[in-house]
Length: 299
Length: 241
Image (cartoon, rainbow over all chains, first blue to last red; front, side):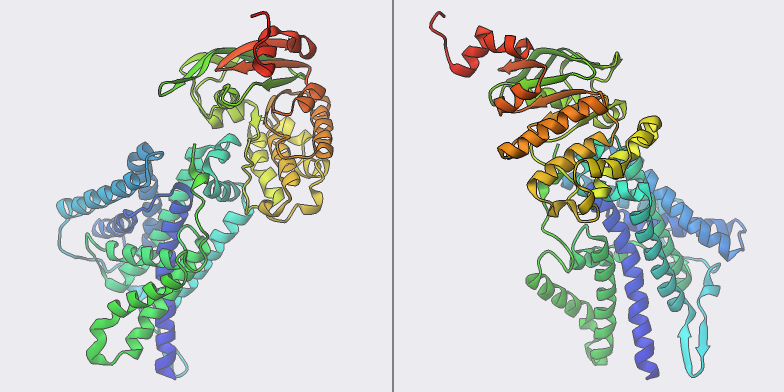
C-alpha cells in the first residue's frame, strides 16, 4: 500500500512537472505557431539567476522562488523581442530553427560565462524533505509540485476565461489576423503569452533546482523534449491537451518503472515511446487536438 | 469621413489597383461593385490596413491611416466583415463581440458606453445564443454576428465585404434594413461590396464601379447605371463603340 501510494505520488509529481512545461510550449504555439525549443533555456536562465543570486549572498528561499519566476518570465519576453519577433510572419520552420539557435546560444553563454560543469545550488534544498502522514512518508517536494502545478493551471484557466487580455489571447490563438482587425495589439498579446509561458517554466525551474540541488547548462533541454512529447500526445496547441498529455506521460513513465523487472529497466524510454506511437496511430491529432485549419493563420 | 486617393497595388506582375480613389461621407452608404477580379477586395484590404498600398493615401476623418497595419486602422475606427466568414468559432457569440468591444473601451470609451455588448446581441437577434460557440450558429446568424462584432468596435467607417452572399431574398432584405438601421443609429460611413445588384441598388446612396483595378465610375446610383463605361462592363460592348 505504502509503495503503491508512493508510486502514485511519483507519477502525479512527474506528470505535473511535464504539464507545466508542456503548457508553456502550448501557450506560445497556440498563438504563434512557434514550437519554442528554447523553452528549456528559459528554465536555464531562471535556474542560473537563482544560482547567481545565491552566490552573491541571497539566503531567502522565498525571494529565490520569486526571482526564479520573474527571471523566467523576463527571459521569455526578451527572447520574443530579440529573436522571435523579427521572424513572426516567416514560415514555421524559420521559427523552429530560430528557437534552436537561441537554445544553442544561451546554453553556450552559460558554459562560457559560468561553467560547463554542474554548479551546486543549495538555497532551495529546504523544499525537499520527507513529510510523515501517520504511517506514510512522502516527499514534500512532490506534494508541493502537485499542489502548486494544480493551482497554477487553475489560475491560468481563470485568467484565460475571465480577463479581457485572456479573451484576446484565446481569440488570437484561433485567428491572429482577425484579432488584429479588431484593434487588439498583437505585440501585447504575444508578449503576454510569452510571459505566461516563461512564468510556467520558472515554476518548473524552482522544483528542478530543489530536487537536483545543482544547475547545469543543459538542464532544461531534455525536459522540453519530454514536454514536446506531452504536447503531441495531448494535441498540439490545445492547452487542456498539453496538461493532460503531461500527466499521461508521467503515468506511463512511472508505470513502466514499476511494471518492468529491474534487469529490463533500460527499456523504459523505448517502451514509453512505443506506447506513444501506438496512441498516435489510433489518434493522430492527439488526445484533445483538433485537425488544424491552416487557413486561419493566413494573411 | 473616408478619403482614398490614388491608391495603387501590384502583386507580382498583376496591377490589382491602379490609382483608385473614392470618398465616403459619414452617414452615407456607398456601394462598391465591379466584376470578379476588379480589385474591390484589394481596395477594402488597403483601407482596413491588411495590405500596404504601393502608392497613394487613405485618410479617415483627415487622419492618415495608410500602411500602419490592421490594428492601427481598427483603433482609428475602421471595422470590417469578410467575404468568407471569419468568426472565432469556438469562442461564444458574446465573447466574439467582446473581443472587439475591448478595443472600443480602450480607444473610444464614450462610444463603448453607448454601444453595449448585450444591446448589440439583442439588436441582431443573437441574444438567445449568447453563450453557444459561434461556429454552431446557422449561416445567416453568423453573418449577423460578423456585423455585430464589427459594430462593437464603435467604428466611424464600416466595410461590408459581400454581406448578402449566400442569403436568400428574405434574409438579404432583413440585412438591408439592418444596414439602414446602422446608418440611422451609428451614423458611420458604410461601404458595401456585393454582387447582388438588386440588394446594392435598394441600399446605396452612391455607387463606385471598379474594373481592372480602376474606379471607372462613381456617383448617384441611378446616374452611374446610365454611364456607358458601366454598361459596357456589365452588359458588354455597346453598339456605338
